Length: 124
Image 1 (cartoon, one colour):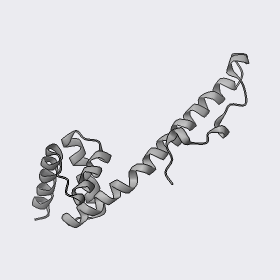
Image 2 (cartoon, helix red, strand yellow):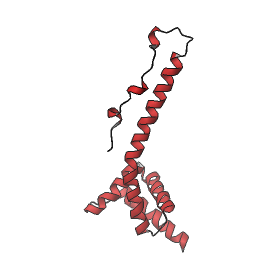
Image 3 (cartoon, rainbow, N blue to C red):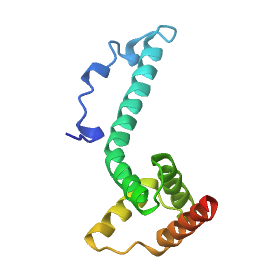
């Protein structure tokens, strides 16, 4: 079950002290800073977990189209993302949408064609 960062139970990440009521030289500020960093890390990890399935599915599609290895498919996705100025997750979502008959947006289609032909030329 995927959860949004807003729905996380972060009660364990609550400072034991009130930084407003502490002397400036105690450990409270460090604790608050650490908790903020941990909350950010948890939220980032949740976003990454939500992104993995569509990216992995898009990699599988490229492995079939290529054919290529999982690592090569990853490299193709990264290249398409960079050359189309599109987030990697969006590239993956657009590739997946083609299975429902949706056309690839032109920048992604162009970048993908270049990446695949470059790969084919390199492999002979």
